[in-house]
Length: 423
Image 1 (cartoon, one colour):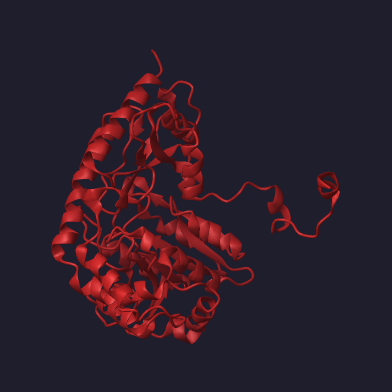
Image 2 (cartoon, rainbow, N blue to C red):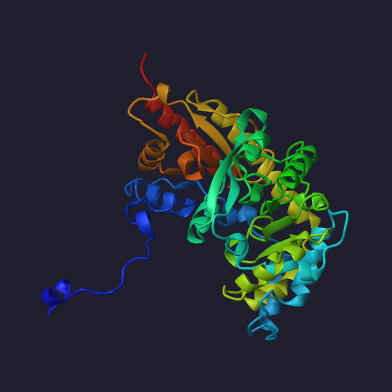
């Protein structure tokens, strides 16, 4: 019977499109990290040091606020939020998020501007699908967050990459943005504070981005999932502050500021004081896309007003203090490794990008091989730059306990010394 079944022809197969059947699988941060972790040495008794992803929730020092935990418990135990939610999310949560985001804006957002999503990733899916049309393209930063590329491919939306400039604090190359844009370009993505670079765009630079986008007739998708996570000389300013110049779609979530990525509660916000988004039909299309996607858990939505209202400033400032200390440690320790160059000290988010000088290393051909061997020999996991669009760079997260960070960076230094070319 088994032999007969092996010869049976079935009418289904993996859903590939055209030449993609023989192409490489899409690059995702999670996929790359899982592949690297398969190289870990099971006989190494030392703890694994996770410097590859932005989820510090496993470390006690990054535990979320008691107010956030209480809000979820209260919403769940009330037994009032066990039903399906409206497509756009429940009104109290949307009203609370509108108020929270309006604090930093020269105008007030309405609850009708807010759409709740299953984390920021779902918000990316929705806006990409809403913008997709035959022949359209979108501009995405390099280095950047590869989920935009993956979702755009699923929606048959062409991606064009503009560069961030490491020698200018990872500012947007605005000349490249204009050169890449044409009559089919619908939007550009900015990630601020920056993942993977740890940069924070100044208000002056954001204004230039807004003016350039207006000139090109495109909207700005502002991925601000790391909003308010800044600890350098540049304060966070939301892109929506410039929405009178250019329409802005803001994406965010509670994942990073409250260090609860597993709670999966995000938002998509239309910042449209000139009604350009409404008049284009895009807002209607966003609602249509939400109707065919899943909703965040209703009790999580119900917890949002209490989370936003009752989380104390002490919690936020403590998280920032920890990240500032860890960013300093990470930058300083990496500066001690000859084959690694740090273009700039991180000012926000939970990451920094560093460049590998492979000429100083023996038997390591590229960033991927570096990360695989580092995991195998030292039980330290970092993300190769190729995953975020920059080959032979590394993305390192400093969002972990400082002693764990010191241990991991010490092991990385020892690894580089062991593989250094002998002169």
